[in-house]
Image (tube, rainbow, N blue to C red; front, side, top):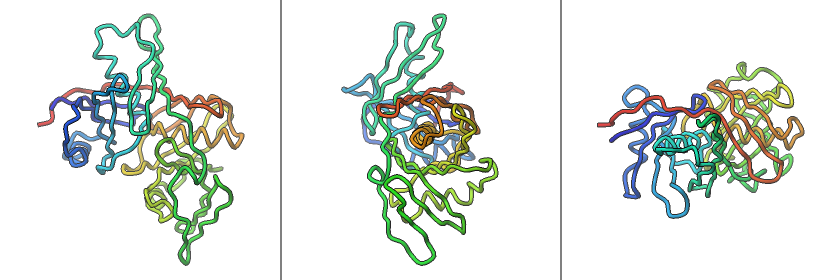
Length: 285
């Protein structure tokens, strides 16, 4: 099988072109994403035929679970689709079918070359009605519904105020006053992801607002662990920060792997842009 290794802000993927035939994609994702015995990646991207859009996309996390959407993966797969064309200079928009719906990508050119791929991430869903939660508590746990959008969890003695956002997949954003590098994400991330409040799991983001145009962040991604970047996570952070009045309609989210730009008018669909690059091509035996 010919594969393409790609990355967007350090969020890396193995991309395969496939038909709609039934394969054991979860098992393949686990094997192919293993960083010691496989190729190594955060997820497996599938480029599929579609009768609703230019092509379809599915993404499987490193643990074999399937995600509805992925912002960095979407940019990478659009970049690969364009690279296959003999001439992409006339292409201004690409439509992609995902489990979260049809997503469009705007293609910006400079001097006849692709300068930027800006993908639609849909309209953010805000609050508990957009994320499957279970509000029951056990002794020693705190689960206080402060409003329809904000929750408090007490995990290992640490109180976390979370802002819930759905980008087609669930996110819990926590804003910090201290630097994000000081937060014990490897310890608390798995506990938030698998907390009983989130029966389907949740992506967990910690963020520090530097100014109205810049947010520093780290992400614990559901089914993967800590990643260098997460496109949908960056969008969730941007939506939460804008609704709380922290930032303007355009903001850069600085993640360990690079910077992602978020653009949102506060009501409609959100747009994500950032780097998307091919790393290498090979064969999976």
